[in-house]
Image (cartoon, rainbow over all chains, first blue to last red):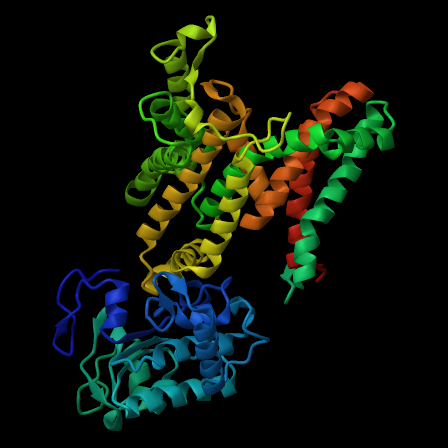
Length: 203
Length: 349
C-alpha cells in the first residue's frame, strides 16, 4: 500500500515512498498481523527466516555466497535470547507454534535495534506465556528508546503497554488520549462511534 | 475426513519417494501389459535391457538423458520461483538457432573457446526469450503459462521457415536442414562407437552448479524466498522483480543448452525434429525430481531409459511403445500422490 496524501518522516528522513528495504534500513521494525502469510517464509528454515530482512549484510553473505556457519551461529544465539523453541536449525519455520513464530519475528526485528516498531495485533492467538513474553519485549524496546506503534483490538493489552491511545472509527482517528486520562469504558464507547470530550466524559 | 500436515518427515523417506513412486507406477502398468497379453516379467526385463542392459543401450540412454537434464533443470529452477515456464521447447530451439547462426562459419575460434562461446550465445538467446514472457508477467500481469506455451509454436514455425528458406543447406539433397556446425564447435564423442558426447558432462556440471547456486548463494536464497512466499519476501526487502528476472534468464538459458547438446552434439546440424518434446518432458522430469537439481539427473536418466527401453520392449514383446508414455505419466502421478501422503495424513473426524 502506498500513501495517497501526506508524508511519513522518521527522524528527519522522508520515507513516504520508501520500498520495504528502505523502511528496514531506516530502522522500521515490522510485526505483521498475519504471521504466516507475510511474517515468515514457512518453507524456509528458522535461521533463514531470522536473517531474511538482513541477508545482504556482510555478516551473512560475502560476494554473493551465503555464510552458513555465521548464519547458524547468529540464529542459535537469537533462539537462546528470545526463547524460540524448535526442533533444530533445519526445521521449517511453518512447523513452529504460533508463539514461537511470533518470537522469531520479534527476534528478527528487535535485534536490529529499530527506531520505530509497528506491531499489528502482536499477541492475537497466542497463549498467556507467549503473550507476556511479547509484551515484555515491546516494553524493553520502548525503554531502550524505540517508538512503538501498536494496532490492537485487545484493550487490556493497549492499557498495559501504551502511553497514548487513538481510536479509529469509520476511517477517522480520534485525538490523542494520554493513558492516565483514558478509561476502558470510554474507549469502548469511542470504538462504537461516540464522541468523547477531552475531559473524559461521554458526550 | 481431512488432510493433516505431518510434522518432521525424515529425510530418508523424502529421498526414497521417487523410487517408491516408480515401483508403484511399474506395478500399475503391469496391468496394461497383462491386458495387452504379454508376459509382464519378460516385458520389464526387455525394457530394462533396452534401457541399461548393454554398452549401446547405456550410451543411448545417457545421450537421450542429456537434453532432458537441461530442460529438467530449466523447469526445476523456474518452478522453484513459481515462474511457470512451459516454454522450454521454444527456448531449446532458440538456443539451437543461435548456435546455428554463429556456429556454421560466421565465427571461428579454437575448440576450447568455440564450445563455450556456443553455449554462451545459446544461453543468452534462450534467456531473452523467457525474459519476454516474464517481463509481460511482472509488469502487465500477462499469464506466463499462456505466453511461454504459445511462443513454442512461434519459435518452431520460425525454425521451419528458416530451414525451408534462407538456412536450407544446399548440400543436403533437399532435406530441410541447416548447414553443419563447424568442427571446432562440435561436442566431441566420449565413448567410441556410440553417440554419447561431452554434452552429458556439461549437463552433469550444470546440475551441480544449479544445486550450489540454489543452496549456497544469495541469488538462490532470494529465488527460494520469492517462490515460497512472494508477499513475505517482498515485505522483507527482497527485490522480488529482479529475482524473478534472474530466474527467467537462468531457466531459459538452461533450456537453450539442450538445443546446444542436440545440434552441436548428437545431430551436428539443425533440423525441425531435433527435439521430440524434450522441453515438455523436462517439466515431468523436474516434478519427479521434486524440483531438486541433483534429483533431475536421476529423473532424466529414468525417463530416457523408459523411452529407450520401451522401444526394444515393443520389438521383443510386440506391444506398442506408447507404453513408455503410460509408464512415465503413471510414475508422475504416483509421485504426486506419494508426496501428498508423505506430507499429510488422512484423518477421520
